[in-house]
Structure formats: structure tokens, C-alpha cells
Image (cartoon, rainbow, N blue to C red; front, side):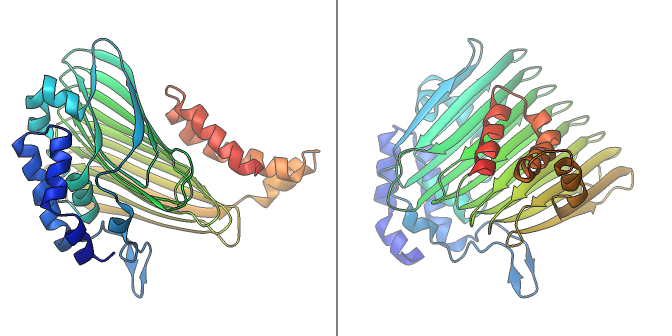
Length: 404
């Protein structure tokens, strides 16, 4: 289905029907319609390009043909403590519509790119987490099982001043279907003064799913927005994670882990924008690729002119288990303030043969030794993912891949 055919099949009536299905106000309908009108004119998310080569090709993938706007079945469960509001968008519109209107689109522009606009126009599900001022909300659980060909979602987390929350977001496929699938999602995090938001996600879609998410947060004075992202499933996975450090003394940490096999393709993008003074960022990603899998990593540390006394660090390491696998990394520094400590590093390698020889010479079977080295490779990031079962779930996924 071409873009023109898509626009013929998905018109204003389709979008209006979606908005009516969820009893949405006029301002939200208008946001949907503006996104629909803009889809054709917007570019796909940016990918790394070198002369004669685009590292991830999104243009040839007809995402629109995978989306059935009026049928996006999924099972979603939400759980949180008594002092935190964890609701669907529909429930939020009934109980606290001002909150959603104030923050919707305040961090991620609904017209940021073609796939964000697609999710904005045809969104079917979503969750809003609101933490009142001064509340330590503990852990919020969100689990989504996609049961149809497509699912488009939006998540908003608002943590008011002096509050804290950890969100664990699990996404998976339901029963197998004889077709490709598409998952698109937008996550916005707003951390007020001295607030802390930890957002952990684990993606375990089946191997016929194409998945794109854009997750972005903004941190006020002395606030922290931390991202923990695990990727195991999907055929093609494009992820963009970023934090805008607007407030003085704000900080962020992004921890990513992935394991690609067969012909999976992961394109992972981590970014931080240092805008306030005395801000700190740490971007850490580790991944493994096997068989014919491929990984692409791009990390950007952007230090603004007024971002005095900045500390910003970035590390990415990929382990290749097969000669047919491929891994590329492109860390970047954009520094416009001399009062900055910043560094970046990236490495791609294979299992150390000396370590393997050492273990096998002491009686460890070769395959077991190799698996132990892979599991050990993930330890530095797994220690950062130790929240409410997220680490255990990722470790189980790694173990399953190593024994298949």
C-alpha cells in the first residue's frame, strides 16, 4: 500500500471514529487530524548514513500497510501503589483532563517524524502515570500483549516536585498470526524539581514484528530521568531514547541491553541534551549479535552554550558470536561549552579466545564456556537493570537464545 493509497484508506472519518471510540475531546481529535495530514510530508526517523550506504533502511518498509486503524487488539494490565495514579488515557480524560492537555506533546512533538505522526493519528492505547508532589510511588507495572497486526500507543509519566517512581513497561506479542505486525509507541516523561523517574522497558515481540518507539524525557532542577531498555524480540527494532537536561543539577542515565539472532536488525539511538548548568549524563549500552543479526548504535551528547560544568559519558560494546553477524556504532560529541568533561567509546569484538581456552582447559565444555562468557559480558548493564524482575526476564531471554 503506497502512501497515497494509505491516505485514501485512512481518512479523516477513520481518525474521527477512533477519537469517538475513546470519547476524546476536540483538542485531542485535532491533534490526531493534524498528524494524519502531515504523514505524507514527514520523513522517517533519522538513521546513520555514510557515502553509498544507509545503515538502516526504513523507507522500503511499508509501515502503513501493517496498520489496521480500527482493529488493534491488545491486553494491557496496569498496577501501582495507592498514592500514584496509573490510568488509561480514556480514564485520565474523565478524571484529570487538564493533566493530559498540559503535557501531551510537550516533550515529543506529535509531528516529530513520520512514525511518530502515524502513532499520533491512529493511537489506540495508552497509559498515564501521575505522581503527586512529595510522593515516593515505588514501582508501577505496565504490561502490553499485542494480539493483532498492529498496536499504536502513547505513555505519559508526570512526576511532580520531590517525587519518585520506577515504571516497568513490558511489551510482547500474543498468539502467533500468519502476517507481519507493527508496534509504534511514544513515551513522554516529565520530571519536576528534585523528582526522579526510572523508566524500564523490555521488548519481547515475535520475529515477525516491526517495532518503533520514541521515548524522551525532560528533567527540571536537580531532577533525574533514567532509562533502562532491554531488547530481545522483533524483526526490525528502531528505538530512540533521549533526555533534555533543562534544569541546573539535573542528571540522566541510559542503560541498554540487546541480543539479536537470526536476521534481526536493531537500530538503537541514545541522546542527551545538556542545557542547564552542572548536569550529568551516562549512556551505557551492551549487546550481542548472532547468526545474521545486525546492530546499529548511535549515541549523541549535545552540550549547549550555557551548560556550564557538564559531565557526560558514553560507552557502547557489542559482542559478535557469528562471522555473519554485523555491528556498527557511531558515538558523537557536540560540545558548545568549554567547561565540560565528556568522553565516548565504542567497541565491537568476538569472544576472547584466550578466555575460552582457559575455561576449556579446566574442564568446562566449550559451548558452556562460551555461554558463560556471554552471560558475563552482560553483567555491567544487568546490575543497572535490577528492578522488579526486569533483570531476571532479560537474563531468561538471553539464556533461551544461548541454548537454542
